[in-house]
Structure formats: structure tokens, C-alpha cells
Image 1 (tube, rainbow, N blue to C red):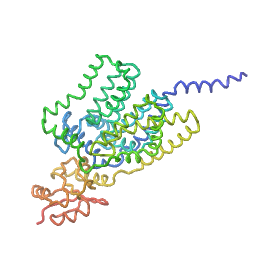
Image 2 (cartoon, rainbow, N blue to C red):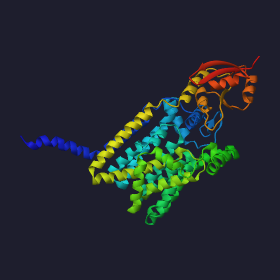
Image 3 (tube, rainbow, N blue to C red):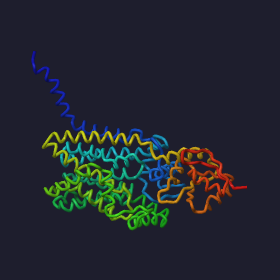
Image 4 (tube, rainbow, N blue to C red):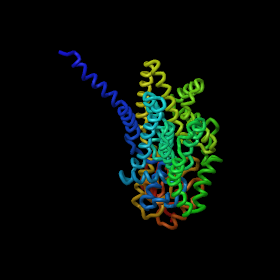
Length: 485
């Protein structure tokens, strides 16, 4: 018997593994990301914040066939460009008007970001670094949380890194990738306006220090790229200005760009170290290795790896300068951090394989913890109660608007956004201890008015009106309110 005959199948198996290693790495990362971001994605309710707002805008655009003009609470909505709404509309058409469909674009964007991080790092530092970077990002807590929400931020980060990937390929010498740079930037602007400028700011600095590469783009490619960018960005903005004029500009630019940059809106402020604390909590323990990687990058003068650091630096500098501060503003920071941590882990692994095994164990544990935390969280309890009551109120659609009566404060337990999405009725916000003038007018116009409020608030409302509870949860009540005899 030929001894080599029994060895040959194992050699062939190993050769097949090596031949398909790239596909296996991509499939493995994609499978892990899909598992983390899609499992039980439709659980809970859309909370009283951005996810409920954007889902309602998409719903009203779809039902009213307003493909260019966003609507919220049955009025034109000027806060954000329409790209996320268009994607959510497609999701609603495919999967129904529910939580899963509202969040699915963000979850799929998260999968795309993980694969882009792998692809970028693979070109910069090899496949091992790319795999480490992808799994580091998958075990970054705050990033994972946002990927399971139906907001503009996940799609924005995806498009920022599409732009970055196009630029990395452009640096390799093929000027045609400039079209991807322009397309990614244009779509990013169409998703969240000037927030997409993180990518060209970082790319611009990197390109400035790579003067020899300025000839990568021909004049024809540059102008065609600019034309592509204009075709993506300008038509919707021109349409909105032509249709709504100053009302659109005042809200879209004046309030949500200029005022957001110059003063804290809705109490969302913070000091110079605000985002350092957010990153410390949202990217632990990788932020610690990020400091080590930064020291190594400077000490060794590894300037060819500057692009991730420029992305991190531009993101931090830009949003620290903006007076309104929210923890998800620095979301573009985390993929760049994962890139450099992945590169560091790969370098250590090549020197001492035991470090690679240790890193793999830490990543596996971190992935398990992230999976358990994300899928075991039942959702916002107040939003779940609001959903339950709003669905009951939905059946009484001819009774006029629903009132949501809440306590004062910058982040009240109750707000109108969740109730608006699930009730399909106009919703009016009434804040205590203000006098209930709005409710008084509505009670005079309609025989009975539906009100969603906390149980403690019902006693205050009952001092001026007749309150008939319809359905109660642990902390919230839906009541029919009428005039006292």
C-alpha cells in the first residue's frame, strides 16, 4: 500500500482550505455580523427617539406617496435628507410596516461596515489584521447597539467607509475608483447632510501628505466624479428649496446645522472630554489597545497607516467642536479604531502565536457577551407600554387626535413619537405643569378625547376633566377624557 495515498486526501483538503481562505474569512465575518445584528431584531417597540421618528416619516411618505417630501405627524419634515426613508420604504414594502423592517437597513449596514473594515485593513496590512479588525468591531458595544436601531447613523457610517474604501483602491493606482469615492460621499450627504464630510476631510489630509499621488486622477475622471456627486446630491435639495423656500432652509440649515453646531440643542451639551468618556465606555477594552497602537504609530513613524488615525482625529475634533453632543455622533470613530487594533493584534500574533490565541479567546468571549446583551434586552419598557396602548387607540381613529400628557424635563418618560407610529393618528403633546389648554380645546371639539399618560398624571388630569380608563399597563394608562358635567 502506498503510504502517500492516505495522506493525499488530507493534503487536498488543506490545499482547498488555502485556496478558498479569502471566501471563508468573508463568509465567517458576514455570518457573525448577521447573527449579531439580525437575531430577534423585531423585538420590543420603537422608542420615543430617532428610530420612531424615522419610521413614522417613512410610513407617511409611503402611504401618502410623497416620494420626495418627508412628512412627520402629517406635516412636512425638514430635519434630514431622504435616503434612509427611501431605504426604509423599500423594507416596509418587502416585510411590512413593523419594527423588523424599520431596523433592517441599519442592521444590514452594520454587516456591510464589518466587511468594509476587513477589506480596507486587508489591503493595508494583510488578511489576518483584517479578520482581527472585523471581530474587534463586532465586539464594540456602542457600535453594535446602534446597528440594531433604525436610524441614519448606521447608513452614514457605511457610506463613509465606502468612500474610504474607494480612496484606498484609488491610492493603489486605478483612477476609476474615484467614482466610488464621489458616489459614497454623495449618498452620505443624502443620508445625513454634512456629517458625511468626515470622509473627505480625512482623505484630503492624507492626500495632501501623499503629493506624489496627485496624478492618480485625470482631469476627465475628476470632472465626471464631480458630476456624479452633483447628480446625487443636488436634485433633492433643489426640489425642496423650490417647493418650500425659506421654511426648508431655516430648519434644514439654520436650525439643524448652524444652531446644532453653535449651541447645545435640547440640553445635549458636554465638555471637551465628553466623547473620550463615551469611547472609553463604548469601546472597552479595545480603547486601551488603541492607545498602545497610537503610541506605536507615532514612535515608529508608520505614516503609511495614517488614514485610520485621520478618520479618528477628524471625527473627534469635528464633534468636539460642535456644541450639541450625542454619543452616536462619533460612530465613525469605531471602525477606524478597530482597524488599528486589528493591525496591532496581527503584528503581535506574528511574533508570538500565543498572543493570537489569547486575542481569539477574548474576542470569542466578547462576542458571546455582546450577543447575550443585545438579544436578551427586552426593549425600552415605556415604549413597549406606549405601543400596547397606541394599538388600542388605533381602533378609535375617528375620535380626533390622541393627547400624550407627560411630565416636564429634557427626556420625559413619555413623548409622542412611539404613540404616533403605532396609532396612525395625529398626536398632540401636552406637558405638565402647563395648563391643559390644548386638551381643553380638544374636549370642546370632540365628545371624547383619547389620552396616553402615566398613572400618576391621570390624577392631575382628573381634577379638570372626567377620566375613563380604557387600558392600563404597569405605569401608563390610556383613558377617554371628556368635559365635566
